[in-house]
Amino acid sequence: MPRRQGGGRARRRDRARSPPRNNQRVLRNRAAQNLREQRPERRQANVARGRANRVNEARAVADREHPAGNIPGAENLREQRPERRRANIARGRANEAQAVSEQEHLAGNIPGAEQEHPAGDIHALQREHPAERDPERQRGRKRPSEELEDLVDDTITNTEADVWCLGDSIMYWAGNRAAGTSKPTLKLNTTIAWLGVRGLHWHDFRHTVEYQVLFCNSPPKIIFIHLGGNDLSSLSILDIKDYIKKELSYMRDAFPDAVIIWVDILQRRIWKGATGGWVGIEQKRKRVNRIGRQLLKDVGNVDVIRTDIDAKTNFFRKDGVHLNDIGLEFFLYEIKQAIIKHL
Image (cartoon, rainbow, N blue to C red; front, side):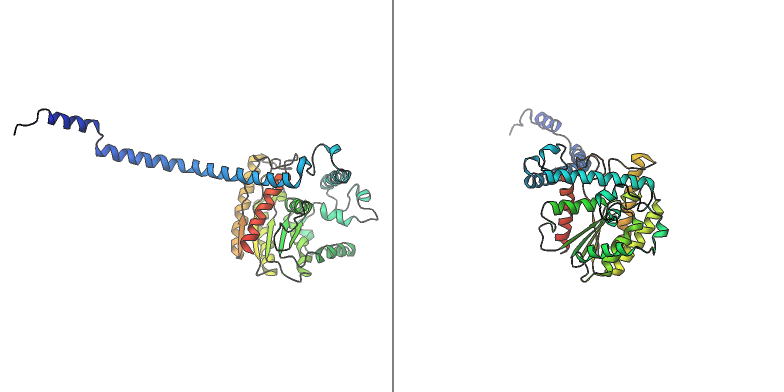
């Protein structure tokens, strides 16, 4: 049979057009490498997408509960109801009194206390705006009998709660937000005690919970702690670590069966009193959060909440420290999910 003309040339031409097997292997490896390099970007995109969804959900909750832009703390006070306007004025006076007390560093010397708290009842204002005091002198400090009575009265209402939310102004305003939107229990079948104190430091932490421990009829099942932001600009990392270690051990000894949940110290747009600038205080915040999470693991039966709230998100008030209504809804959502997880 005669040999077909041009068959060899056609096969060689086809082989020249198709890449060699080695080249195909190189292309596959290069494609896999590109996928590995794109994983962090895809992960960041997924995180950003999830954060946007949660932000939209929090904004929808805020709009639903406060229609027509009638949100507490809105700038246009003339369109608000008289009761809300008076509440905002009183809140502004209290904030001014807190600023003056922090500058003077004098416990009890709070200007405007007579107007805000008639009949000499200054102890409530002192609890809301604790003046900065020497940590060592606070250990074992005896309090006036009137202050003890006030604290006992406040404690009785919280001794049966299944969940305790302890901490600074972040937790305080979260409790106010929950109560102001008619969901003090976050619409869960449980009881929650909102025990946040504005201006709280770690050296005052035990004084805020010791009466709760003393008069506790039913121990809490879950304890949230968000504290330490006010200490970053005044204490060293070693001092903060020492306070956290002591207080967590105290809480574990007092409530051996409770789940203690550490809530990471949130970022701030403005750190008052910070000497190392925003970058320096931010690095210190991250390190303290790592220390707190590690110390918490040592006591056992714990959990950690790392929120997606940062200084870049529009979750803050004009002061750059406290959360606005949407930020508070976002924070409450994280608290709610943790309660559902552990109850």
